[in-house]
Image 1: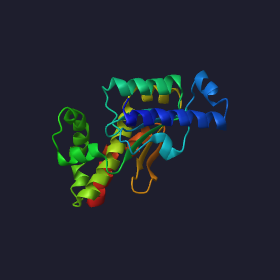
Image 2 (image 1 turned 90 degrees about the vertical axis):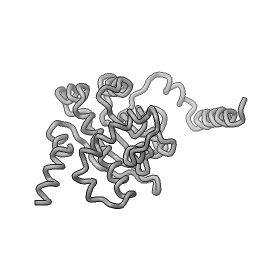
Image 3 (image 1 turned 45 degrees about the horizontal axis):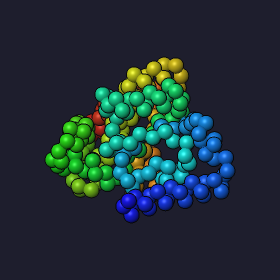
Length: 220
């Protein structure tokens, strides 16, 4: 067995032993079921571990991760997770969390050719093309990358709100809330971009169409 694999297994053994010492009933309770209040949609980047950066424990977050934290309308993986979280687990909040320095966002921004993943990154490129009215004003490449990370989060929150799953849930009540966050690798801090969107009116205020209208009016 590779030494690196042995280290992972040894880490698991130590972690489980520590948990039992802290709380002898922890794993028994965990085995009975889950009732997380949050669905976390984040990036697969190894530096952005949801439980670590929010200091949450096993069972507190229902998690879906992919390259650049995208919400794609025909992604059955994401939609299945979303439906289960909203309709079965009854989560109170859905959080889309991007992060500065995202490799997927940077690849889309630079129009790099990476193979199969290019098809996935087209979703970010489409957002970039739409937001040219804002991105064109940013000449510094690093600042442009940061802004595209933020706009990508906004776009995914917008995509979430348009899904049949969220629309049906909102018709029945004001749950779940949609939230857009971005994580700073340099500081370990989370910035709130958009929070507690619980209806179509709030979504329209945050979404790209209203933002573009406000932008154009400000430049007149």
